[in-house]
Image 1 (cartoon, rainbow, N blue to C red):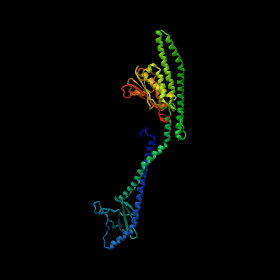
Image 2 (image 1 turned 45 degrees about the horizontal axis):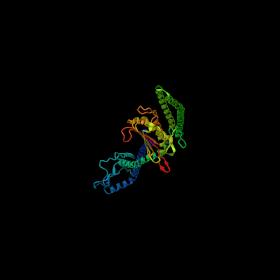
Image 3 (image 1 turned 180 degrees about the horizontal axis):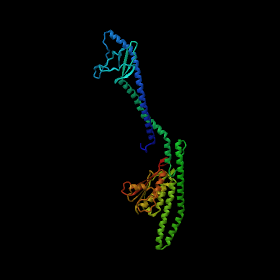
Image 4 (image 1 turned 90 degrees about the vertical axis):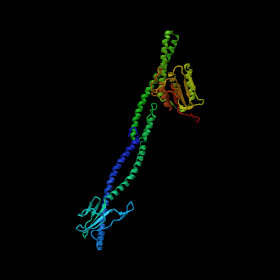
Length: 460
């Protein structure tokens, strides 16, 4: 059986396999005992029949002599109808004969001429190819009777009894499997609960799992897992604290240095102005990196989900205002927005981080001067579309990873889509990257599906 299958099914199949093996052994033992008991019972019946027949057959013998019969006196068999409707002799289940002291046959049942009786040299049981015989002890007159029972009839009775035993037991096996499967599923329910608790954990939620009510085996596993999550949480907290502190510490000196360089550039001659322009671009890049690191630190803390529904159309306007203030961006933006409010349970800062990074990514990698389409739908989907080369699906899957950049020469850090995907997941929404967009042969589109929310009884 596959090791990746259901544990409850694996347990059920192993239990039912063991049950079937025990059932087969019990059936074999039952068959042996049944065979022995039926043989003993048949032997007892033959013995008692012979003892009861002895005086009756002697009486028949004397009556036959009185009527002038010849020895041995033979009795005709019963008649029966064959499948064709003709009368034919019935095969005798019991055959017998009467002997005197000298062993002479006096009376014999109807048997074929070639039928052979065992020698009557001693009292007790004897077997032939077709019958089991019992020879009685001589009575006071020296008469002995032999009675034989068909072995075929014994075998037939045994197999009929065994079949009557096996068929109901075979019918029980499927019922036993269903019962074992149900019991196994119920018994393993705590495992499903533990799996659900583990699945609910993430880098944003590493609180210990409550082991109350768990079986002893799972409590040990849960305790080990809780210890691991505590150590992991401490390590992540240290990493986040370092990134946050470092970004905050760098933010002010970078801003001061950028302001000084811009002032010096305004007062410098042409040769110094070129060097200062290069320095200014480096400081701007460092400023963007610091901003990304601050966003990354917030994304790692699990920002995203909001308990209250937010109007995304208002948040959408705030994000657009920041971009419309930049002349090089305002000319390229093509905006579509719904007229009615759009509600979703997403943190305002999280929505700003997702949408801002998607817009920045579009401006970063789109050809210069090309339009950037930005849309918020009434269903709560935020979409950014830009022109550009087609991105292979394998590369598209790698883009939301940390420090993963596209194959273009754009000056990015490989953090924007990673931050957007992480915050989208924490918010309960979903980020989707498409290339080329629908009904297009090239380009790139990023979509954020916000978690639905309600306000005033209206679905968002």
